[in-house]
Image 1 (cartoon, rainbow, N blue to C red):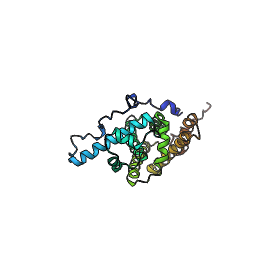
Image 2: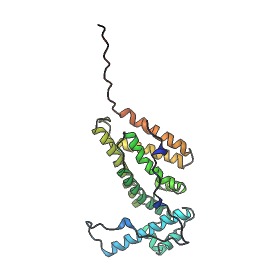
Image 3: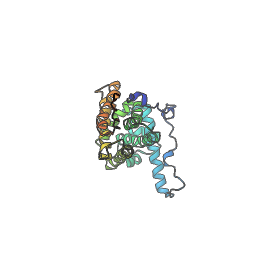
Image 4: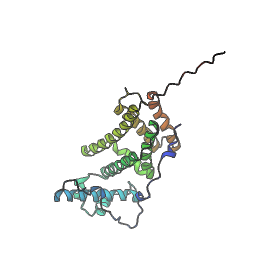
Length: 252
């Protein structure tokens, strides 16, 4: 029997919780932009561009957590990143864009870390484990997640749309890999298209996530319904071992 979502959601890492220390947040160095030894060295202009981008997104991330999305202005972010408003405008035209940029970076990290810890369990449990990692991220700041969902599906900037599409395809790919493993082990219908099914499963998750964060249902209902609806997609395609026929007893 599938466990409840709450039992599968790992506790948020304390290191990701940002506590305000002063009126102007301290922007840490961006670890994500550090070059590996195997990667080619970038030119000075590109290094400067990436360094400014990292300062902007780090500033936005901290201010959104400290002051909330509505309480943060684009000028606050420019000041915290120690750049001019005009320079910030070259990287993002609005704080809504910055919210999507922050989300994209953080969620990609969540996807990688959660998938790396994937347990050896039935497919439904594995899918729930992956989605539970996403839910933990959104529960950390529900108000910020609500603001994000209002923006992410109707992006005007083609570059931001492309970034979100890359994230979505990464998630589809991870889900499809889980399905392929189950198929190779003879536990799942081999005729099912892994990518299409992955898209279906993620669509169910997004619909239920919107219902919860949008206030149409509460979290208890959300965590109950999500595995049940996902199972409606997964169970018909599972292959169960046929029971061995029972031998009739013969009288001597």
